[in-house]
Amino acid sequence: MPEQRPQLVKGNLQLFSVDQQRSQALEAHAASFAQYKVPGNENPSTLISFATKTLNAGQITSKLHVIELGAQPGKPSFTKKQADLFFPPDFADDFPVAMQMSHKYSLIYVITKLGLLFVYDLETASAVYRNRISPDPIFLTTEASSVGGFYAVNRRGQVLLATINEQTIVPFVSGQLNNLELAVNLAKRGNLPGAENLVVQRFQELFAQTKYKEAAELAAESPQGILRTPDTVAKFQSVPVQTGQTPPLLQYFGTLLTRGKLNAFESLELSRLVVNQNKKNLLENWLAEDKLECSEELGDLVKVGYTPDYLFLLQTILRADPQGAVNFALMMSQMEGGCPVDYNTITDLFLQRNLIREATAFLLDVLKPNLPEHAFLQTKVSILRAIYVYLNFPVFSWLTFFILAGP
Image (cartoon, rainbow, N blue to C red; front, side):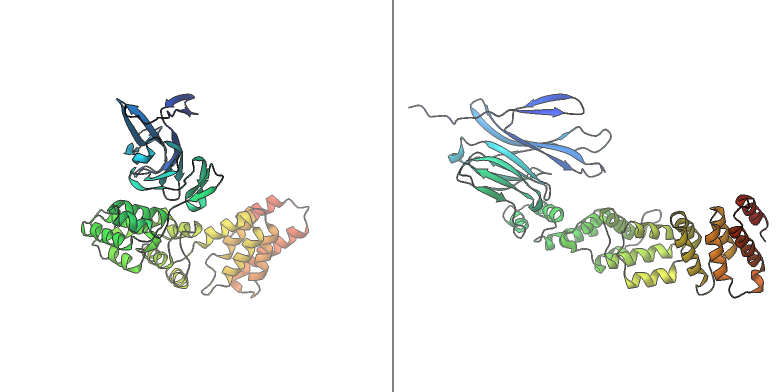
């Protein structure tokens, strides 16, 4: 009796490019798209992963493919990957029916007709896990984005939810699969526990090899922030600075800033560097972008070592809120050590915008002491009050007179 060959269900997909307005046929059973950032390329790449099961020369071959669509000219591209889909003997007739991407963990889920689940790493196409999740055929799946998994419906009508166990996947990959690099990458991408010792060990290795840029990136992405500590900052501070090169500490802070907000200690140390170098504009930008965590220590540092550009601040407020600008100008007039911007300059800023009432209000308040050195301003406020009363006078000719008649 001749041996019965496995049945093979053929799979065909059509890939259509909206930009190029053309399509391409794929001999595949399931596919899905993902966004991935290739190192050195600030723009994300569009990837497609698809699963195939074909018959060639009497042999059935099952593969997973990951390729980039529309590589960006002049930019680093994704190197295509492929891996085997191994079906046990009892599942020789089985085939993929769906594929879902975990954008949370950058994992690929391949689901088969008979309820098998294959899990692969998107970046490397490395096999992570395989198990049967349903005794009944699965015919529909959809992404469960909040938990990084997927929902599935089987023939019995059951709705299944599948996702990874965050507490065990990293130790499983490092211990059972003996793939330390993948374990560290999974921990970094998903902020997962279980790789603390591996991450610290890898950080120390990079530092010993003077690969400070790579060490900074690892520390910035360390799962649960285990390397974002004062000890790490001190380690980068201890590196001698080479002439003409960016200090490793600044490389570290620069890497952190590209990934989000600094914690309180990091904010304080970076601000200390900026204040010492008199680069207050950088501090203003980071505060405006909410990149720094404010603290009492940071406030003390800014108060002692940082002088704001009061004239610039007044001009900025004036454009949006004239009355707020009056209040800010009055606040400056009461500062210890005297007003940082002279009264005549402040008044002219209001007059340049035809804000006679606001200029008058400011002068009436600051000239209450009736000091001799304010004689010119007292004359100026008298004229302003006259203009405010006699509105039939041409305002712009008076304003021109005031500016030309300055001291």
